[in-house]
Image (cartoon, rainbow, N blue to C red; front, top):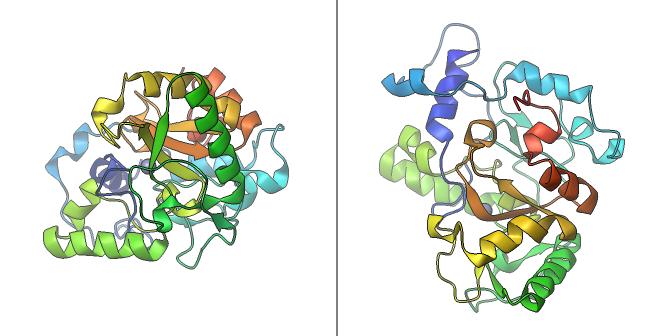
Length: 286
Ligand SMILES: [Zn+2]
């Protein structure tokens, strides 16, 4: 594989949802991938240790031909994404698709702004009526049902953070770059355009007591266990499951839910897949 991809991934397998959020700036190609020449920035010596099961440009391309029959062509990432080139970050062609695959290789256009954002009627860990409460209509309706179902089972939940605009993520990332430099910033923040929070289809949740919000200690809580079991019924998946960091590019984030619709969510949950595996953008090793 292209060494620069390995470098990129080594630098970017980080937590995606915390206060330091998940997005990075431009969708411009990774600087080290074109030509052999190289603007190669500082090559970290630890690169060799990076797992190399990360999706490559060619494996992503293969996915285009193998969209699941269960998803309509219009909704499949295959239809949403142009074929990747040599490690460059691809700009998603149909960012409004509820099944758009957004990850470190597939970024939303900088101009994308969902047109149907609403305030879901659920509890949050804060009281302000601000952007991060918002979700797209279909996801808002679904999260209301999910929260109601959880409460009925004695597991009340609270939202921590949902929508985040490209501009907000860029401002955040840029501030980290200013403080620590780009290479370091990428180790704990995500490039603008690559955060699922920008889709309006993702939300970080926690227990209604607000403890362990977007933190590792959320794993194993009754709320996390309930979500593992029931999120799919409501059309959501645990987007960054445990043990799949080499595939998703993110450590386990039991609090980060992504809406994809119940059919796909149930299948992904039942088969213990990631979205990348579901769409065959990486070899499924199991
Ligand atoms: Zn998140």
